[in-house]
Image (cartoon, rainbow over all chains, first blue to last red):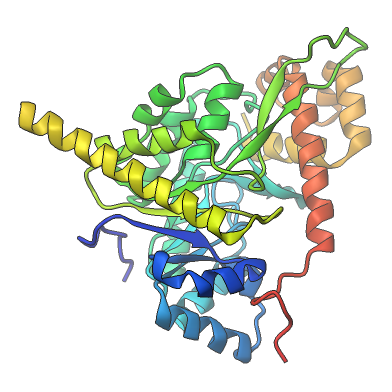
Length: 302
Length: 79
């Protein structure tokens, strides 16, 4: 039977993505960490010893699994072997939830090697919903679905990002993992107001949040056109601190989404002192509290 | 519109520098040769070219990183 992810009544929680390079810091600061997110694909071929180590970790701190290569929002059927790998890991570790991206990562036998935004069309929504429902049946639980960052506004779209996301998540009756830096980057890169884009998302479906950072990179000069000054785009690279604006988006989300939220800080390289990461976790807690306070103030005023 | 055909062509543009170069030089000819529906070819001809090049470059870099990264659970190999 497929379980729908539901709010469990716990308070908001803040954690961090498990990375081997951060292991020592995570264990040193484990009391400050409410939950850990483990990249599932790193362990699909794990030996029993590694699975036991992960299970030991899960026994100490709640874990969630995060997949990165299923391509659930591709218009081709997701490869069964990839879903079955996730199902085996979910069975072995019993995480609180699992998640994947609203992206395509391959098509027609061509592996892109990373997350790409498909053309956002009604037909693509139907394909994505079918993929998600099949993955939920095989794994036994529906995934939380994450919005991705893209440097290219995909061509041939008939739906905007928020409508496309809502249609898939509602159609699959799934929860959302809202990556606020992805949303922020897409809004800035394509001329939208980040707060407006946030409020257009299916906020009642959000169960989890990703926070990360990025850097500004210049657009290439095409056709030998003068490149002074080049326009810049925000690249979501996970190797920079979470920018202040993204914490403000978290506060806004907490104001408008009354359900409890699990917030994960993602860091994939150029690792700072771990105290810098715990400081970002504290800023996330502060943003959540401010957002909850603002919502409470509005209710009382009404 | 065939979403699979269009996604496959996008995947090629992201991964095959020669296909990207051909498309940028002659979008109408390249999309016609790829067998895209006219509506998809028209959409591709209006694509954000800078974004396309940035995306392709980003994916190339990511594929390179994947090839060189071997994740270890605790930052060390388990015995």
